[in-house]
Length: 508
Image (cartoon, rainbow, N blue to C red; front, side):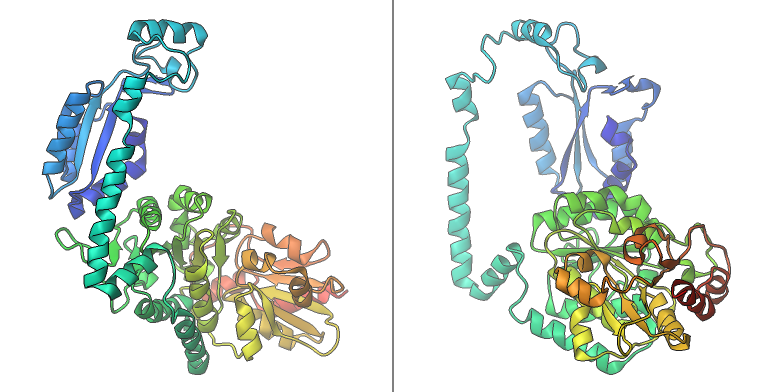
């Protein structure tokens, strides 16, 4: 009952009905109890009718304690192939307990020794703890059946492999989570191409170019957007949207279902054979947070694409302008968060997300156009390390300015305008940089230089570990406003003059 009160049950089940997912069978354990007690005071939905309205096949009033009745319902559901099925099972929580059956008292607490003894007596179960009678063990022992099914599948796949060796090899590769043999070569070529083109564009546009290039090299890339494909720019030329009766797809129009999208992506990643990505505005990542956290907890390769990354989105105002989202995404264990500043960093960030198998990645992109930044081959190679020296000075720097995303260009201009010796560090991924060896981290941020300024259009708390107690952070610790982006950046202090002042302040 509790699961069906959650909003995600509507998001996922509505989409499943729309897509006609005939292989999906769900069970509703309808015991009328949640942690607070009998649910009629807070859950009075007509659930079977709700699912029929979604376009599901519904099997009503099944005795959840009757194995034959449940099996009959399953067979009925399996016979319906053009829509998902919901099997509504009436059950009694704590079944068999003389004093606690049908009560929330046994929802999240043990029965206790006395009640366990009474329950066993009521059920006619005269065996000790963890003692399983031989005849019951044999009845549930599926090892022989499972081995036969496995053997039959392997025999079938061997025949397929003999008839279609290339397709079989591709299946093995994708299910193993391995990238194509020529992946690195093609990825490096695309990064080099971005550097040669020197294009000035929003990083969401650079992201679309990356998807276009990498999808051509990676047939397992599986995309989607939560009703913002034309804004997130996720619809590459080879995308094939999933529709009812047309399963040959590599893209889902998730509709306005951010939580459902992120959870479905996790399911696709867990199944294997695909590398899923899904997009929405960065502000709307809040709706998907639980699934994002679960992706990290499960160490799966889900790629979350978030555009419109700051007050730079302009007139939509503070309801749509993220300020605390980037710092809190960086705090999720095992997740890598990238905020690139131009086309080259975007290409590298996408490549890193595809290659990272220890958890999910959040890719954060701008709405507004950003300039291209010149780099040496060594600097391009070091982008993948999370942070690198983008502009240096002669000798020991008077100050180090660290920036990400749209603020990198601002940092470079401020360094140029300052009368000090300034090193500029672009740090597109704090998570990745923190994992580098001490020698590399020291080469980028030498401990001997404590005069530091950080520039990012987001909350400042997470940056103090880099800025130090004597540093300055040009950030935003309040909500935005509705106005054109250039006016907002000026209003909130993201100007050359203000960054130069911060440099002068830390240098004394």
